[in-house]
Image (cartoon, rainbow, N blue to C red; front, side, top):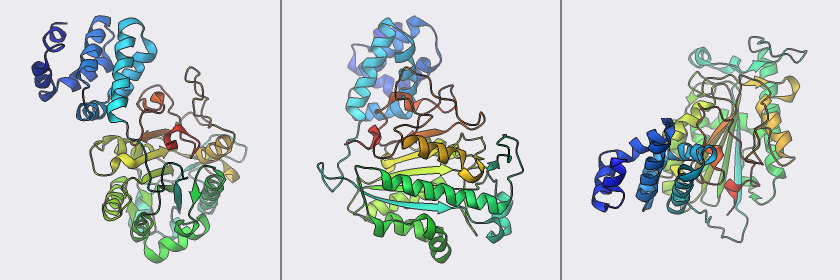
Length: 379
């Protein structure tokens, strides 16, 4: 309360508070305290502090969005009011509208690249030693781990996933698929084998005519979530670097990238994106949809492919996924496997659905993004 008295109506003191890390302290209080007086003062000071985009981005990087969203939904009175007002100011100063070169009235140009993991038999010993396969259900549909199952069955599931995603993307309205820039499921293995994954990815990102790039990967991964190819492992940091270089060299700096990962430990990609500062070059154009948490397995549902992808596609075609929240007050549906909870991070518009930004370590199930039909892709 004393701190609030000192800084609330004093611009000079508020500037000093920001410089010494006061905003981060207030966010931590909002995230951890259950004292109404403390929360009222903290949210009041945060509301007063959000005066420009720089402050808004500082608060977002400090984790203000999930903390304030939780207060907005769980508290009443002054705490709820201040939290809601602060969220509205964050949105006002930090929201980044999407204006692709094709223009506001035109549909965005979309290209996709669908990458399968390499068959373990073709991997170098170094890559294979790091590989963690997806868990396979038993023939009776039970969740018993079958040691990853037969590798050929694993690869059949990978191609089932990518073909399903390809059909799903093509079925979406509101975008123009640029077929000549797409790497389809049936061609991806050959493209990666001939050019190598890094060169193929750089070429994919190089176009300045594409507004939205969709990059999907299915199959095995390392314990840190790395994608397993024949002789190399690709990490999020490498993808980020390729994306930043490509955007710096092309005219389309407004392009966006959606990464979909159906692999073990896929949530590591979500964690990695969340750690990237909002001010990092072109990072605000990236979103990641992960099939599971950072320390969780990814399941394969027999002939239906990955448990996440099969649900994601079949349910999204009917308007929402089993993990989406069409009604913000309704609890999410239970995922098909208790030890596999999808998560996501979205840098380019974190305000379309505030509940979507709840921490992946919390109790909330995080909804996914239904391509083109969701608020994240609305212009």
